[in-house]
Length: 403
Image (cartoon, helix red, strand yellow):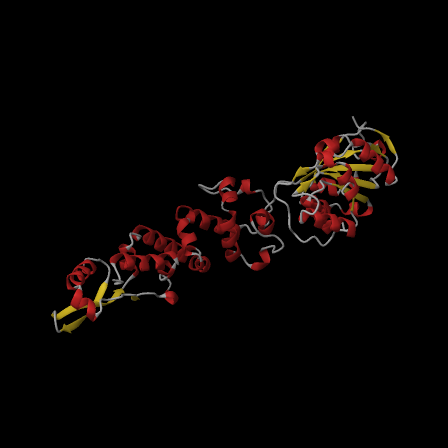
């Protein structure tokens, strides 16, 4: 027997809840009720051969609260005239949520809608689009509205998040809820106060005009004549982006060559080379270096791991500095260090459009495991003599080793 059971009817209403249709029905344009449910009823044959089962089915259905039944009278040659449920209707959202035990959640959602209508009606579109997300935010909703009020009062504030001074709200709260806040700020602010260049949680501050913790550039001076701070030796210097970008004002002479390496020991042990600095690591985050316009006049050489991600990082560097060169990231270096081959945990399969021909060929061999599965040669495993010989081959004069 495939008659609709009480459990089947409850599942139908639950699906309406899960799809957000019951919650959205609070908005007049998305009216849902009264809602007819699917009801499969006994056949004439069932009345003849399973009459007791049919009576039990009718009794079970009649005990359901929140369902309005439309019955029909059936005259049967064996069982006589009887009345059976023919249609099942849920007349109101209140009936529906009572049926599936969601009355408290329904009341919370209505409170969110009512409060938003009173304080920030422009946010109702977000609630209508994402009703379950709004319901999940019930405990924080008033704080969300407080923050929208604040950003409207102080658009593009140019302050750190720490300076947002509202009851029950601290920096960690804002940082933890940047995803939802970004969607609400987009609705609550005029478009000219939103910087569309930035998006996502990482772009939250710049999108809405908050100050960010400055990114920092760490570099070593490999030639004392090019020391921007006038310090002796080969200082290890860390500057924020702005200071690094404006270093031309302080430096007597800027470097002609910039090396970039991802390994700290290689960075610290890099040999002294006239007219050069070395920058320690940036991973995929080379955007910070783009603020240093003076670097466009330097020769830039990048040394990373010989693996798929190493080439992906090189590809990203060339998005900022198209003229950047790679070194010690070639097939000869890889094959000469077979003893030190390792395994790359999660190789990249991205298409890299900024690699030179030989780089691209080696990247493809690594990506498609043509040399060895998930092959990786970490840069710190390249011998120091290989580094020195490569630098000499590139035309650099090595004065001494940095100890």
